[in-house]
Amino acid sequence: MTRLTPDTRVHRRLRYAMVGGGRGAFIGAVHRKAAALDGQIELVSAALSSQPELAKASGRDLYLQDARNHGSWSELLEDELRRPPEERVDFVSIVTPNHLHYPVAKAFVEAGFHVVCDKPLVHSSTQAHDLVHAVQRQGTVFGVTYNYTGYPMVRQMRHMVQSGAIGTVRKVQVEYQQGWLTAALEKQGHKQAAWRTDPTLGGLAGAMGDIGSHAENLLCTVTGLHIEAICADLSAMGQDRTLDDDGNVLLRLSQGARGVLLASQVNTGAENDLRLRVSGTTGSVLWCQENPNLLVYSPLDGPTRTLTRGSNGLCESAVLASRLPAGHPEGFIEAFANIYLGVAADIRARLSGVAAPPLAADYPGVREGARGVHFIEKVLQSNQSAGKWTEVEAMA
Image (cartoon, rainbow, N blue to C red):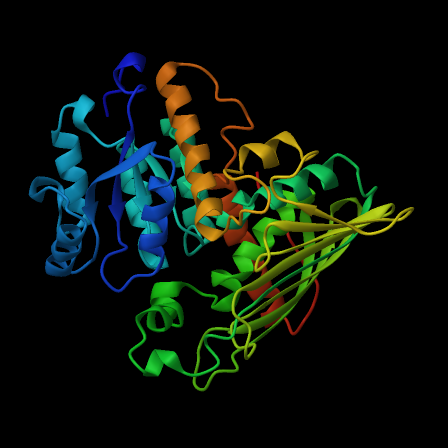
């Protein structure tokens, strides 16, 4: 793909194309709202379904021009490559079921396009490493939407843990509890349940791949620690399910820390209860996704304090991730939008020929996505070994 000169694309909205996310999809609409939130990015092209007619109908719902409303992702790619460089999209957002992440992402990266991809990144470590190497060869931007790291108070939590505010980390507890798969929705025509419980579409793991990967990323992003070994127990509690819908994992972390990771989609009554507690030698911090504007800080030598989003005294990364004053709640869409802002900042910087400031280009990348896939595989390996400890090798 011909590279553009820096001045031709910087002083305007970035253009993007979307693959997947049409009628009946959940996450596609979330991505579109998040990308549009700050007025920096606009959707101009798409292939919104693997069914051509549904794809085009979905594109018409979004008022896409007929010439850029495609019936397949391969048609989209061919059309973009035919266009002069100044008309092409700046990046592609991939929000398909998991089995399509790898072929679509690989094709667009090899064509020189920047990419944003939903998680988990791909189905296997082999695919993940291949994608990492493709991104390195092409020098493209690649963001993975582990959106929970976009919350301002998660970034405050990361700052406090990694700056030593709670001392040396000893114990980490992360849990992601949902109950939406308590009933066998996949047998009732529920689109999301059907593909997420199908190993050919969702991958080799169920709950551990879908939400356990979020928990792994949140833990590692906030603490800066590496998972060195795991002991996993997975269950398929739903009737006739092949994939896990509940999982419990013990963790041995770098620097001698210990942890527990829980992921369940059959915890009856739970909605989207993701929470992380990090305990150190001089204090602890606790964050809960369902009340995301608060961070509970418990120092060893003083009373517990509740830090609030938008208030005075927060770190710069938390301030930059906030849009409203304290007391005006921000939530899921805004956190998602912060990932898109990070990707956009990196793309704009590269078009200008300069390095993006780290606090601006703050987003999970392809290596974090690959690490998540590696983690999922090791959880499955440990579970199959009847609970034996399994080493998690660091990525090369």
